[in-house]
Length: 129
Image 1 (cartoon, rainbow, N blue to C red):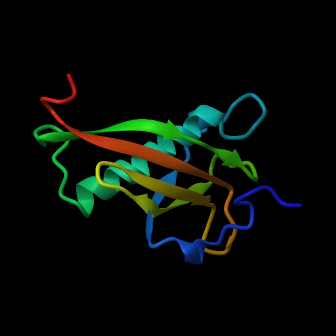
Image 2 (cartoon, one colour):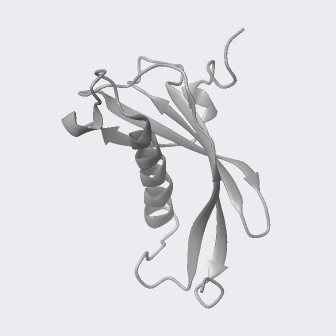
């Protein structure tokens, strides 16, 4: 039985961002270190908000706080792969959204290498602190 998300397809995602891996992303075992996946997730979500949503990360009156994450590793990534990070909305609430991300190697690779949920809750700057 395949792990949940292991059969995830590129066609299930609407937005993509190409993210090149770097030599430093690899660990001693020759594949991308687990912590780097979360950097890729953060990059695709924030670039989407900036590019498509017009978010001004320096002056916006609201901020996104990540309140929950999960990650399932299906196959390793390694330098010099270029990752196609697919992004979709899994659930839209009144003050939060669950983003789902699939990491794909190339257009020739239809199945996901890693997928996860990313749930930011949004608060006004006066609410955050």
